Length: 471
Ligand code: ADP
Ligand code: GLC
Image (cartoon, rainbow, N blue to C red; front, top):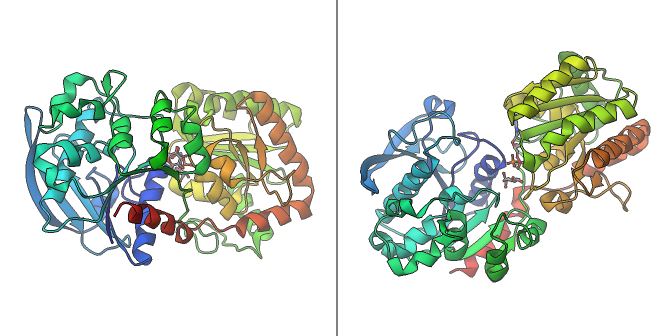
């Protein structure tokens, strides 16, 4: 089976969050399982582009409204990632360093999608599945079915995976001319609440819709940033498939970012050594339990209540815990963390920015990982943490609920709470500080978590079933 994944991110080419991790891993494991999976994404100006060799695969041209543009599709020469990787270059739109956050993102990603469909329509054969990820690629199922130029792709099955339903790519109807000449009777397939809504369009037009955990699938019918009724109506074609993690990239016994490798057997000693180095680097006391947070500093992650929650915990635990933050996002939260690093020297520290290497060192050296997320479609951090023997402290939502069992439950190994409030977070940190004193219990939980299988090998079959149901 030949599957072409279309995405805005793919690790290690370009990553802003978990979407990149998933699109960098899922195709690799699909290829290992015997299918042909490929990835096509925008050609941003990233390090990966300059450090690798490429062949030109296709040159084409198209229109975005009145704007005529040329595009080039290049292919990575060595199959380095374990799957064929294609990048689409559109000068003036995609040739930027960052993935998102530009005023013309609507134009950038619409032009990208047009180029992709144009490219696929020029293949000598048809792929078996076009698999789109999130709103940046969610207009493709519509284009394949209702744009006159691409209608001979109408029978190619499409799948849309929703990694985050909060962002939908809304555009005013004044931008409808961007979409190549289409059947105007199908206006309803683009519209939601008076706007062009790419995510809603993808849900309506794709053959199957998946989300990245079972609980998130259910939650979308109740809370989906305005699309609740759509998910209720389309529930027959929607399915939750829990993400896996790339056990080759995330392996504490081989991870090249770590100073000390460890396995289940050597977890206690191994984590201790990694923790010592981390604490020394950030001026923290390694004899105290270390709580870390890694992620985007945004409302979805409940990042803005973390400063108050941690201050309360520092007070209530009488300074008997250390905290380290790695993240970037809302400037007010960044500022609050920087202030705290000055105020609570030796107890609290924060790195504002994005640092892949440090994140690995933190998963390895920390005792606890905080994830108070308000919305978490799957969450990979908690799974990485568990693979590195770090106890996740999570709010019971989405994928966090599906992957973490509270230590108060039978054979439980994590800490769960219900509300994204200062009280619940502080209380959960308190539970962490108490269990940390019980070395035997900590070791049991670490070993238990590390033995859980979150690998993609188990998950690719579920996608295969979805694809086969569309044939
Ligand atoms: P989301 O995609 O919503 O941000 P996930 O938990 O699915 O959340 O994935 C986040 C991914 O991004 C993980 O691989 C995490 O380690 C990484 N990450 C997030 N913020 C940072 C950061 N500041 N530095 C390094 N890695 C980060
Ligand atoms: C999104 C979600 C996150 C999920 C990731 C990968 O970024 O916010 O919960 O883990 O996609 O699917």
